Length: 483
Image 1 (cartoon, one colour):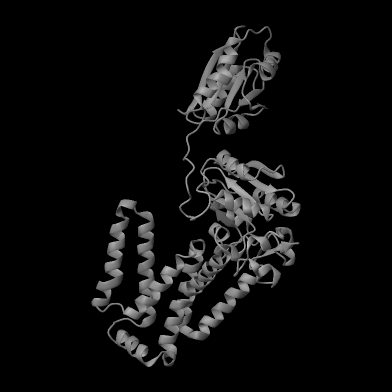
Image 2: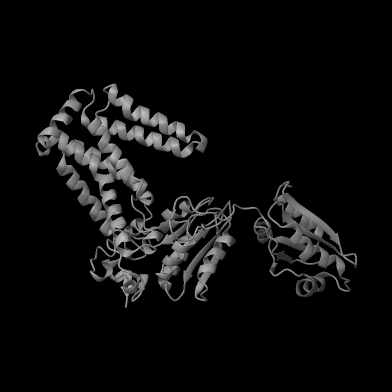
């Protein structure tokens, strides 16, 4: 920085190309010393700025100049709760665009960053992707500091640590790593820090951008060891288990690492309801997952290669359906699945006011009219429809379900049941060999531990669950709980 205020202002204006939202408020103190306040329009609270910065500056009498005046203002004048000294223009740009007010005094090579953030953001609402019947209705929002507050409200624990930094060479997006220092392993926390530091991404606009950099292999695999949640209570539960959360400014989705396969079938409601009901619901989720992935492929395999396994009455109806449709069973299932995915994407992207129209058109196109015209057989449509409905039960796994269902359809239509068996074996081997931060993806199913299965398929009561402290430190050894 320069000693001259005019040179500092000129340099910053050139650096920002005199952007319309970069504002400069010039002030003259009582001893005729010039100073200026730099802000970014819409990012700072003007009332807070006037009360904590401008009014105190103009109401004092000064007898010193230069660096002494700067120290006097820093230590005595400003009434803001957050005041930091900065010495580079990069810090000026980054902090001013984060909502801080920057104070520059003529005759000093230093500046002050004053906390006066006041940008607008979406209010705290219930996350639509993780609805619950019982439990909190609060979800993460786009503001990083608000999300940190939501976590702190639920975890009044001095061991809860927040570490902030910036990522993205062009966007300079602020991120925050949160963990419990007495639960998370230091090696895992350091590994996450190293992976984020090595991230060479140019622009960071969402938490999903970081997932490939946090994976052990770094490849675009089907399953991921990095979870996503929009619920503060869910994240706090993971932190207690020793997980690490990563909050990205500008997105309500918080990353959780490591993430296990069985956690896709768990929800907050499971721990609010009675154990027997939670167990039934959880078993239904596992069954729905298998049906959504395997049912269309098995249907094609049996229709094409093993029709003798069908009961005679059902076989007669299926054969009549195939005889009255122009396409073979494999192409018929692929076409229905393709049209279904198109209708789903259309319903997801269209405005809500047009959503009902898409549903009506979809019911007519894929349903009654297609069957009446002889383009699609009723049994084939039923197989794909059942699989589609079951995929809604596990929304977190929908991308994986879509890819696997298409793969099993192709293998079932080409190689029959043996193709289904071979592909299932490959998927299981891949899942069992995948790990994140040294934690096996399918823990505690493999390596198997009977004691640790009490919250996988069957959810035991809280009196038994609370006897053990869940800790991710033992996951590396195949144990999910520590007595």
